[in-house]
Amino acid sequence: MIAIGLTGGIGSGKSTVAEGFVRRGAVLVDADAIVRRQQAPSSPVFVQMVQRFGDGIVAPDGTLDRSAVASIVFADPDALADLNAITHPPVGREIRRRISELEATDRLVVLDIPLLGERLASGEAPRYRTSGILVVDAPIDVAVERLVRFRGFEEQDARARVASQLPRQERLALADWVIDNSGGVDALDAAVDAAYRWASGLAHVEPVAAQAGR
Ligand code: ADP
Image 1: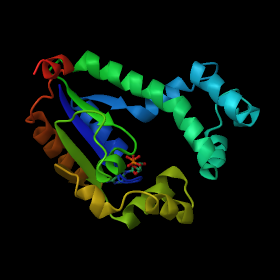
Image 2 (image 1 turned 180 degrees about the vertical axis):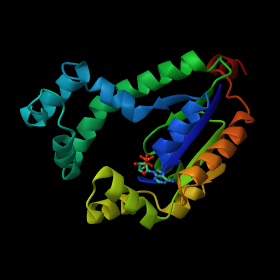
Image 3 (image 1 turned 120 degrees about the vertical axis):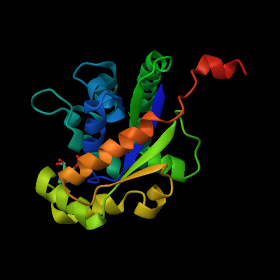
Image 4 (image 1 turned 90 degrees about the vertical axis):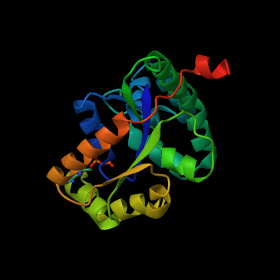
């Protein structure tokens, strides 16, 4: 398995790059998607969240009201810690399970893990071994414009979200390869081609068993 750690600020185009890698044959391990699946109505995670935060986090259609959860934990560090204690262990287990299925294969695996950049920048040991780190980069104004145009953000909210993330230069400093996504979709496609070629030539990460034997 070649494992790429993918990171990029909101609106940078990280999800678009992940899709481009999948189209070219990579396997995506998308932590956000795993979390969303694990929060499906009546799942263990969903039940624990409702026990902790109340029925106010359940939307009329019975699914999780993510914005209600976000507004509770935004203002309350204890609530955030409780949310993380409920959601992080199962997503970590599922990511490790996916990696263990893939690590003895020749697949190119893209790990899209929220806060990967923040973690690396703060000097925390990476939780998952990678062959290289791919950063998707776009100027702040471009990211904000995309969030407003395509994702329905108010400009002020988009700026606040971008500003709350790892500063651009700090993220770039983590990169083994950078995709500059300041241009249009054709330029991005060419940049994904080049990044995919780079990634395909990287060293495989060794399965855990092989490492333990050293
Ligand atoms: P992220 O995952 O980094 O938040 P996305 O990949 O979802 O960002 O991109 C944000 C929005 O911008 C999406 O609607 C996407 O289709 C669009 N987008 C991404 N890159 C480009 C580009 N180079 N040109 C035009 N639109 C883009």
